[in-house]
Image 1 (spheres, rainbow, N blue to C red):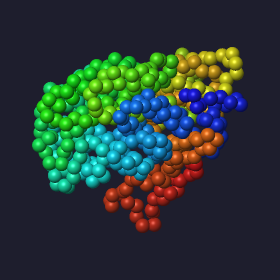
Image 2 (cartoon, one colour):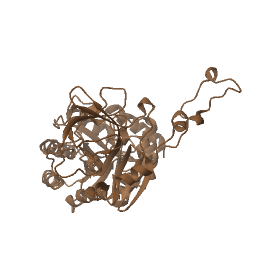
Image 3 (cartoon, helix red, strand yellow):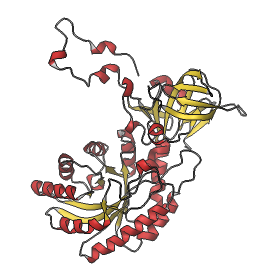
Image 4 (cartoon, one colour):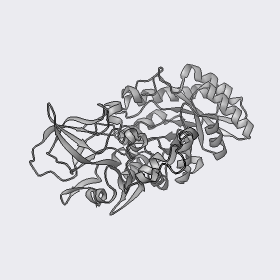
Amino acid sequence: MDDFTYRGGFLHAEDVPLPRIAEAVGTPFYCYSTRAILRQYQAFKNAFAGVDAKICYALKANANLAVVRTLVTAGAGADVVSEGELRIALAAGAAPAKIVFSGVGKTRREIAFALETGIFQINVESEPELEVLGETARSLGKEIDVAIRLNPDVDARTHAKITTGRKENKFGVLMESARQLYVRGARMPGLSMRGVAVHIGSLLTDIAPYREAFERVVEFVRVLRKDGHDIRRIDLGGGLGIAYGNETTPGVTDYAAMVKEVTGGIGCELTFEPGRFLVGNAGLLVSRVVYVKKGAARDIVIVDSAMNDLIRPALYDAFHKIVTVAEPNPGARHEPVDVVGPVCESADIFARARALTPVVAGDLLAICSAGAYASVMASTYNARLPAPEVMVNGAKYAVVRPRPDYAELMGRDCLPDWLRPNAGDAMDVGATKRDVA
């Protein structure tokens, strides 16, 4: 979080004080640092200098068009898991030749769109998907390079809800079954079985599971080549973790050294799909204190952001560092408090017994490491308006996704004929509109 620092008594995003943004756009809001995103991308790129590799940003981490455009402009490709993400990648300027389509449930429509777009590679995750891909390619007269995503049955040692490489997970094809899929795919017109893919989970904080999985993949490539398949690519996925608190995470240079060691003699182009590593610590969720309530055990700080803005604590029991936007005085006392949102769920808690300097209603708090899996997982639960997204670049900032108003929120709904009001008694959805800039 080096690009979020205290200066002049207040937390800044690069060179912009956060209170200035809060005054202009209201709270809560997400704030992204351009400099932090580019620094992480360059670190990843430098770690693999001299290696034949593609870096395809995983849009599932943060699909804001400005975030994607920032990375594409720096040279990144895109890893997508839906037609929507593919369209965002294209709108951001990503070259089709640098786009990988992953995901366990691609529909016929999505596959057809990917084929028509002419993307770099589709990562197939099941026998039925391979059949649909082959049928669709034949019907459209298109060709596509294919990788089978292997399930290596490796424990990523991460949260159970974000591990993807165990045999009981829904992802990929077990290695004992994948060999026959390559035979079937090679017989299908339009499919070139050029690659092998793997992704064992998200937020890995240990390189050892990567090594185990990658060694299995490299050995499988040798087996496939003996079978006569022209395997030219290995997609090693993403999942490299970041520090949300004081935990130790693997450095990208250590990760790269391990990858080079394991894959060095196989002669394949490599593809990487980092997401959280690039954007996770490049974002904050800035909230305003609404009330401070006396609780049975400690004070409860109620803020205007909620689990619909950042669901990770509720969904994964995830830790996010929380700091005051006003710089604490040296030696200021810290007291344990619960930081909670206003949603009608007991799970709507950002932190329990978290040590903070005293705050009062109107103060600003920043929830850190909210650049990944925050806005993309947000909802309008409790009819709450989605928080706007702001991008900072040096001393400049811009709203890159505005907060909608209530008319827009309700405008997505349509009444059936039998519930429409009578003439002269029309409902005025627009009457609920208010200034929520």
